[in-house]
Amino acid sequence: MSKSVDYQGAWQLMMNAGTLALVSHLGPDGDTLGSTLALGEALKRAGKKVILFVDDDIPHTFRFMPGVETYQLPKADVPVPCDLTVVVDASSKDRMGAAEDCLSAPILNIDHHISNTHYADWLLLDPKAAATGEIMYLMFQANGVELTETMALNLYTAIVTDCGFFKYANTTSRCMMAAADLLQYSIQPNEISDLLEMKSRDTIELLAKVLPSMTFYADGRISTMEIPYELYNKEISTDSFIYYPRYIDGVEAAVMFKQVEPNQTRVSMRSRNVDVSAVALSFGGGGHVRAAGCTIGAPLPEAKKRLLEVLIKAVEEA
Ligand code: 5GP
Ligand code: MN
Image (cartoon, rainbow, N blue to C red):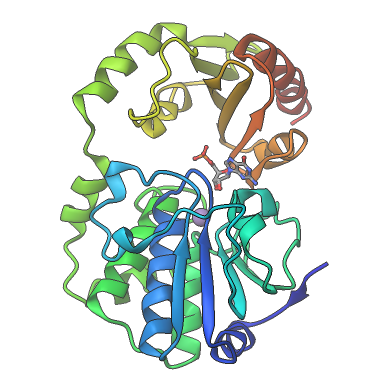
């Protein structure tokens, strides 16, 4: 069980360290990257030595984020000495990837997932925050940390990624106020929106191939789409695909299956009300009530069968 810390407590822990390793989660998104990059910049400005880790490729979409080129790939067998590990936006320890093996310093976890497994020594958790970027912003405010234009750009990107540009149920007045303040640092919201929404032709061509896989279950309350191993290409972003099964009249829960290895299927879920984080958690994943994911160690058809058994029950009981 982690010890809970508040904004001051978390900042103090970091101020007591000389060298800090900051870790973003596997399958990095705008929130984990933006929050980590802004924190890294704040810590460097406070005179700290900072190393950033992410055990994954950074999608092209996020390459515009200032400082993103400073990320290193953790190597399980190369220990990295530091005073404190800060894990950002990751609800379970396995989301650190190989960073879990090369870092042995105590862990501070800053997160907003309801499914957080309390794996860290210290935890700054706020499931009401739309994004970890919102928590980071509030922590900076509470500790009088000055923002720079690049920190603001990274935090704004973090927030809009996770609240879908203020469309999702996690959007609050507090989240909008944080974003409104960040806009004072020469940020052009339309430019960030364009950068995040832009798709490659490869993505749209793949979408055309996988749209016909759309299938409905539970009287149309569940919609699924799938990318079999033959069509899977690590280089092609498919994060936007879940939009299609999700926004269909009558659909309560949408699922995207992606066979990333012959025996491994990535699952992405979105819902209107049903708690998909509980479904994901039962397969070792996690997330939020209305957006969650997991990886199932089975080929796609078997993974789909196993997941649907649980999801259909959840939808029917709701
Ligand atoms: P996505 O479907 O966009 O990959 O993920 C939706 C949400 O679920 C995100 O907040 C993400 O952090 C969380 N999530 C996705 N996959 C996993 C997973 O394998 N483990 C955990 N703990 N959380 C996940
Ligand atoms: Mn997040």
